[in-house]
Amino acid sequence: MLIAIGRRGTPRKLEVPDEVSTKVAYRLLDPELIEDNKILVVGGGDSAVESALLLKDRNHVCISYRKDQFGRIKPGNQEKLEAALEAEEIEVLYSSNVTEIKPDSVTLKTADGTERYLENDLVYIFIGGELPIDFLKNAGIDVEKKFGKIVKKYRN
Image 1 (cartoon, one colour):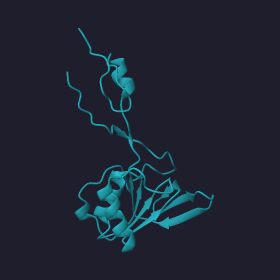
Image 2 (cartoon, rainbow, N blue to C red):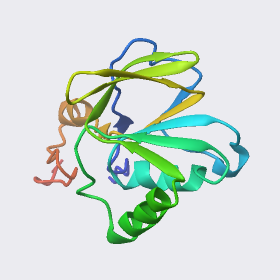
Image 3 (cartoon, rainbow, N blue to C red):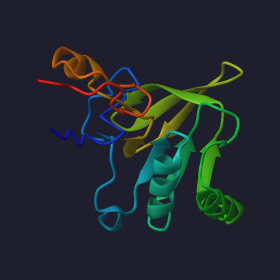
């Protein structure tokens, strides 16, 4: 039996007020159709950076990242992001966390405890995912959580 569920699984949620909203998405579909919006991209990995880069030409894009620098993105994405920052095509709010999502804005808390309010139309959240580990274990399949690799062969 082959179970091909990918590495991302179910998108991880921020668990903030009003996260369940039509303005919030966990994957980017048809970026070429999105224009004239104020967009917040949440996350610090390749998915977040690549999405911000795809959206920047027709929208105002801001990235919220909980750490003080991008440390795990691919070198090519790092170069493209630095060029976009230099050209002021993307804004990055380092050491920030979303605390609330409203219909026309988002609230972020920075490392020093201050709150920042951003007018906002769309939020894209790329903060990882959760694999269905419990489901697989209940089905008798032992897995490593880190990569979902089988550690014990199932025999009938």
